[in-house]
Image (cartoon, rainbow, N blue to C red; front, side, top):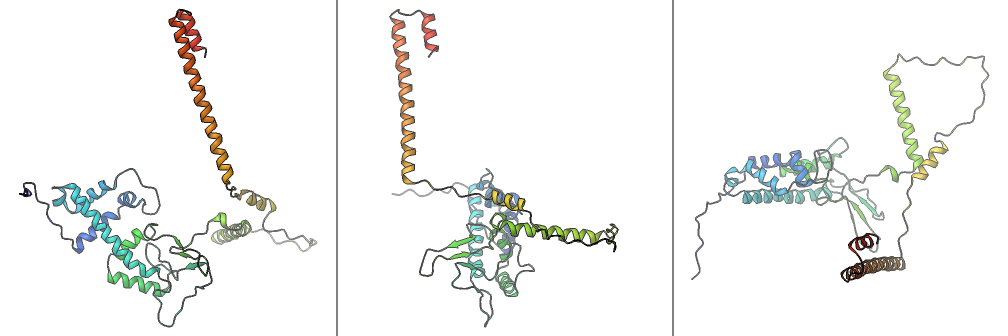
Length: 317
């Protein structure tokens, strides 16, 4: 006969999640310390994960939200918090898919400006983690409001998971097909300064400096302006100097790093063979030293060397 399971231990109470408890859970997740451990981010940065275990954070949240379960069995309480966070993430991913569709949120009669022949597919809009801003089109704002009405936790979950690469990858590249390779940008593409033409980058910096100087002059009208040139001076014709110096261009060219040439298969084989030869020589040298020491010990035992001579020869190797 099979043994019956004993129920002598304390019973784990059930947890009923209501709206207020879910809001408390979201507030616990949004704490900077919890964000850093659970998702490897801070409030306004992307720092790496610390050594603190996620299990400890789940259990800390469980002690704050469901103390009646945590007091009986802390590990089970932490697992329940983890499952509820995964439920929030899955629900957000399902709703956020509507923001990733090209042409999503457009009214009847409107069309997308994306060309099918372009290798890069860019979304009609990108909503930042904090929600729609002044650059968000009206159609995207309406769609975001509809998702918020459908699920009230959507804005907070969007702030948590919108920029996570495992939830919303920056770009998705398809294989080479009849129309070539396609790159779909799920997040707004970021163009770094090193990928910009140095000439254009220098022009932009010069324009910003001139704009800042003009703003400072307007903010401080007391600054004396140079007197106008006298009429008696004879105007001279000067050559127009370029806005960018040649030194700056040469310096920008020198800062460009070249991609090293890949090693061929023959080079890899030669490197492996060279490393094997080095290891073999080191092994043979070590064996030779051991044999010399054994021979010296045998000669010492036979009385060919005194103790002082033995030690001198041993340390002279």
